[in-house]
Length: 605
Image (cartoon, rainbow, N blue to C red; front, side, top):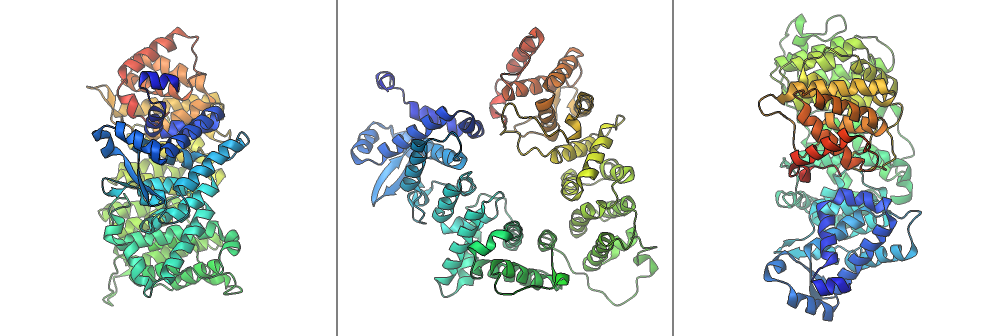
């Protein structure tokens, strides 16, 4: 502190700026370095207390430059207005969203966290944090409220759910990873909001109005689409937390009831499943309303969520026969049937295929069915309604017959068609969700045997499958001594790791611009091939680094990308990289020179 005073250096301001610039790195450091965590929490707490202490706040405000004041946040504490540095508020949000009580947590540290909660998040919708303003706008964005509501600490998450402004409540319910305390708290708040007015429907519509959604920071979409997504997300949460619902819910949630009604009336399909789905949610929220329900009327939440997010166009039947080509042939759908049939009829046919497969009533060629659906999708000029059905049913149907023919169709044949790349990536991700562990492992082995691939999109689909099925939660947050699970085929042996890296090198050769020497996927986002390389390097670092060095020595077209990978591995494993090799050191220096500016935008630590 003496040094700061004598040298006009503000340690806390610099610390907060670093936290805001590198929140992912700081999140990892919180767990790994308890002393650093306590220092940051203590200093941020003292800075916030100083900012809202009248005498100290006045002295600080007089020394702040006019340009800095524009960046400050206005907060109201006990009817008194104060100015809070913007980076200090950002540091508070990052700390609170990452903090978690653990074995190394000291009592004083927890006391400081609780003191910060009492100062800025009192558990009321007009709390200090909820009313903070910057240049006439809300200082805390919807995305920052999401971080707080999904905090590692249940106490912080619940306080955030109680403090968040009403307009952000639906936005928070759309996010993933919501703790059950936050979920139930927000649903209860919405129910009380509805009960406090004479017209709950009008209030709920205002919360999901165009003006309200504009503050969420999401991509634009129709209001009914947002309602459908919100309905599906809440349904998924209720399914996950169904066992705990008895402890939290005693009355029907008015907001969920209203939302189910809105989605039901707006859905163009004439299906009896929607009322059953709504009743299903009501039974979970209020388990005492009905003692039991018929097993035959049970509707799976995941399936219904997909149904509700499908904006289908009804096709009017003119009553005339379309001929025998419209019907399934020999128990298998034809392309003519898929393209010409009304969406509702095709949905029922695919649903029947799935049900028969589940009950083992009928064996069918899954790869042929997938091929028919993909050919039909291409022939229909990628019809949106048909695409929705394929995304829903192909992953579910293909799980019953996972073999070489199916994988050839999914990863190689489909990549050769004029179908959107993102659509195929979504399809592959869906397969990971529905396939069994045995089928996934077999497919991983098959991918590593595909040495003659020359289609970059096929390899990209395979990378997506391998990354999605690796069971790696995050590439940004892991202990330095952590290794990927051994049941992941790519890390099961050094030979498999080499095969994986060879596929990466071949892909980079196909996608690297020969004139510029750069990959077409360079940027701040981490592509799947790089994610896969980092995951494998956790378990076989020496092998991967050796292959990187050999590739650079060979002056291959993908050598520039190898420099980038080497630098990323150093940033991830600064203490375990093979420093005893001079070649590693020399190439690393060259990598730093190549990526001095671009590395500052990388998302990896």
